[in-house]
Length: 165
Image (cartoon, rainbow, N blue to C red; front, side, top):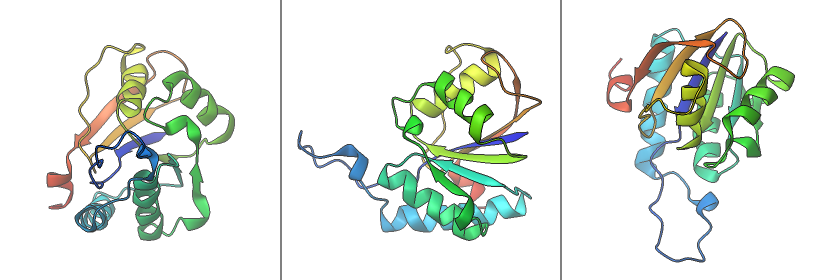
């Protein structure tokens, strides 16, 4: 199984108001443009996802929708509250095993959730520091998923590289 962890694209900055709902911040026009270029780069790398699992936050939802359109996977796009920034890696792994197994699974989300998920899959614990840039993608391979070290890092690419592929 290949698991691609992708951080959402560049979103509008918070307005500084305590009343602003962080989940509603959309991608900027530049963010959308970069994600479209990243999709083209991913295709050149022969990435072929079967399923896209995404956070329901607007910026992740928009990123996932661009991916789904680029890979013709609009019917294979699922949103999960487990992928919010504070999401728990253990719950995500359990949900994948129970409901979202695929040969190539794309997960679109946020920090720190994606970093913790990568760390758990790669080391079995939360201590590995992985920096997934906005629009960056981390590719892992795993034979099966469980709550201990079960994956290998194939590659970790920032958006600056993905848009140039």
